[in-house]
Image 1: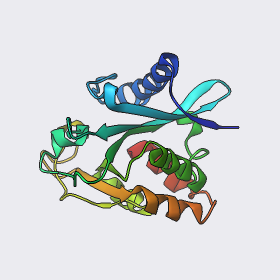
Image 2: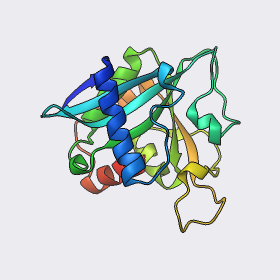
Image 3: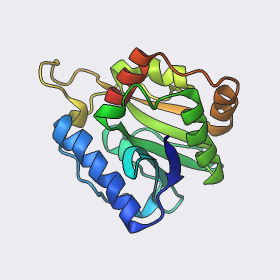
Image 4: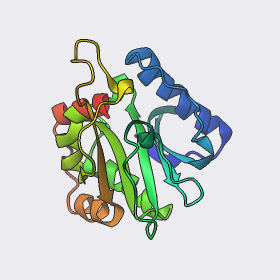
Length: 197
């Protein structure tokens, strides 16, 4: 049975970071720095199964002192209303052997309840452009025009073609959307979601 919690100890955070390196750097071939300069503003939320971290994401708070988030590196014209608390949801990963088994509306509901507990009004995410429809299914809306993020470039795609988009959602709306049903996402959608977020 999967259990979900916020990473509080350094060991829990390091286990989340190890999974991020395994999926993004080793499996997907990205050159991400893990940990990175946003760690002091990050909160990791993870799933563990039989003592192992098998899925995680992180919330990075945009503060008035430091409003920039990782997505600003590729989409610098995106700004937020300072009356609300924003967090970027980044580095959503699921270990390969658990994809298609862990993604459900109930799991998403827990994520958004954690975002609410952390005091966030809105969450934003830089998505691969081809994952836009999946983000919309979760409850996100487009918040930027499509743009090219060199970090998301896949060999074989046209150079400088739009491959990313910023998506945004109100946390309370996500909670309302996902509390209405406990039905799992179709396995194919869940698997694609795990691979592209």
